[in-house]
Length: 350
Image 1 (spheres, helix red, strand yellow):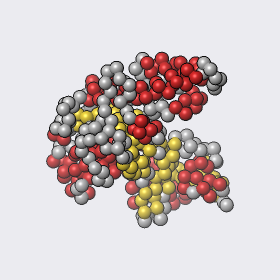
Image 2: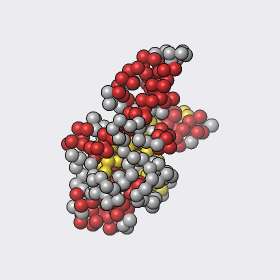
Image 3: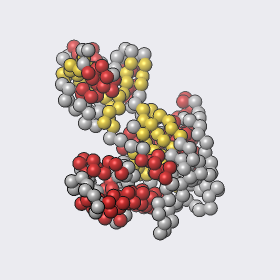
Image 4: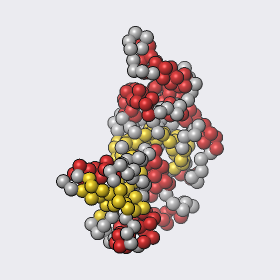
């Protein structure tokens, strides 16, 4: 699963990417055309607790891929077509969710001052315009050739919705309708959040009400990419002192990563033991047999049953041995829908 970080030149999106991943991708003005890719661990205190409880030799957190989209994007101008170059659109279409960065800090390399509402409106317009063209072209072809059942009516509704200035994500489409639209690479239909990149000296984690309102129900988080990048460059033991000096009680990074993880509608099931405690990311609603395949295809193929207990219950009992002795491990079959925080032991035979 991959989340694209998108923003106009000078928005600080590569600084944010570096802060999240610990990498050192080039930053600065200009139209960078290449993409940066990195994996980010999803903070999960449950794995830490399980590892301590079972004296695990290894601790493994779930990870999400982040793509810092390049391409030299420019803001949309009134009356123009989409400002997103084709290579940027293509990169975004390959992402499962989007983080749209809004600049809220002064950048001496830019002639325009910070205006998050301007950037938010332009980005929304860019996504909508990039979706309109392909849908209109397809609807035009449907006058000369047959389409899928219900396709013509659906495209008409989608185009009307987009022309009204609203993204496809707000239409409340069902699974079958999204299936019809799957070949269009819709951008405005992807899960997305706005990230307000604030001035280092002004950062307080708060998002102005005007920005929240303009986002139209989409999540908005605040971060200072500069602060977060400074934090990652410090030894771990010095980070709390740095945060305290900045007047902050915690890093915004962990909250952001967890929110981005939620964008993908992912949950984590857990495994634990002396060798390893680990979080395994799966899509919400995944049945037990398919979840077993996340660990190894042989486990999925030879699935017999899953021994399951909720994390909170396992911790309250004091560990897996105590839960087993108390008979609290549930036996679930292949169709059981794994829940977030389930601690699972798969039984299989191949």
